[in-house]
Image (tube, rainbow, N blue to C red; front, side, top):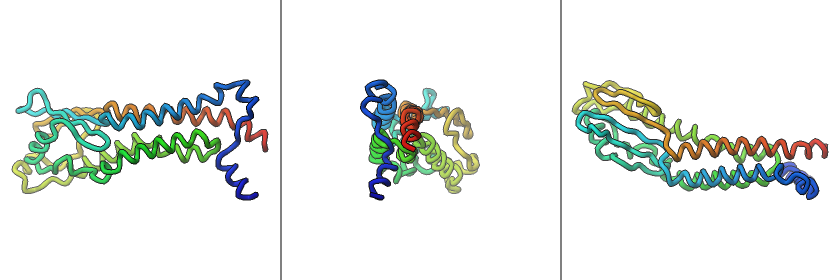
Amino acid sequence: MMATDKIQQIIGPRAPAEAIAADRMRYLWTPICMWGAAVLIVASIFFPYWSLVLHAPQYPKGLVVNAYISRLEGDVREIDSLNHYIGMRPLGDAAQLEKSISVFALIALALLVTAAIFIHSPWAVLLSLPAVMLPAVFLGDLFFWLNHFGQNLDPHAALSNSVKPFTPTILGRGVIGQFSTDAYADIGLLMATAASILILVGLYLQRRAYKPLVDGRQ
């Protein structure tokens, strides 16, 4: 009996059929928000999360690198060759562990958000919290690696004396020596951010719908 009560506390109350019939949308808005968030998280895998345009004298049109959740695309080789002269490691060396597990991690986050649809208790918040934090975690990890690379330049590089250790700008414009960069959040990160907002709205609507049932039971 105690185990059953414990499970009931975790999954939360179920809405009576007559309550659903009387106000169906009250109980449908949360699943709509959560399913939408899960779809956005999975779909974001196929779009770049962050992009950077590097402007250099020898490249008047600029060089572009697009950072997907699991890989880099664009003018990565050319940017690495320029970074080599100032002693910065290749971009592909960063976040190798994160890139190797990211696709599976995002699918897992989407499944947790989907599971939260059926949990009408504070446990739904715990299930959804990792997905809500996804945009901040991505930017934090990006900052960590770019800062690590920028602050640990090879002192034996050809142009090591011309550039001091620096922290690259992850959003907005930055200037490094004779180079400038424009970095911005791309479609994937915007989708993940929209998913976070949908989850928060869904959790709020879920609480508004099911808290009266909890209060009535008490």
